[in-house]
Length: 208
Image (tube, rainbow, N blue to C red):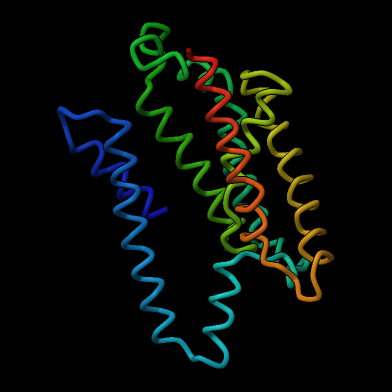
């Protein structure tokens, strides 16, 4: 939450530049600083206990997750989902651009802040449990949009359901394709990266 807050704050202070490019570059910078902090923690950690735990968390895994682990994160996920559900029609309007949103009576900046805060809270809560399982948030919404369209009222539950099914399938593969369980983050990257490249190529052909 702090990392996203820093990116949004600095992005709001930087003027006369492309907002999207600025946010992307700031995200890279903050991500690099966070990665350096994580590396420092790994250096300082107990090599026989804490270091393996940090390493496996960074790779992502559901192997040791129990119902007792899920319960503390569940309220945070629900708190994040409520504003996304209530603002579903405003999120559709935001896709038209800030000027169009203002013309329709929507405060684009405030709505965007609430949406980003809610999405970040959900992501941080589940990442604290399962570790860093990448590519799910990049690939699954595109698949859901192909199936149900861009309307956020349908896109949000479809993304959640398809994402859950996808993660169960990947977790099953991680436990069965080798004698040792393969980290989830590795498999999702192997599957997600080529699929995302295909999406980019498909979108490029559509633009031309």
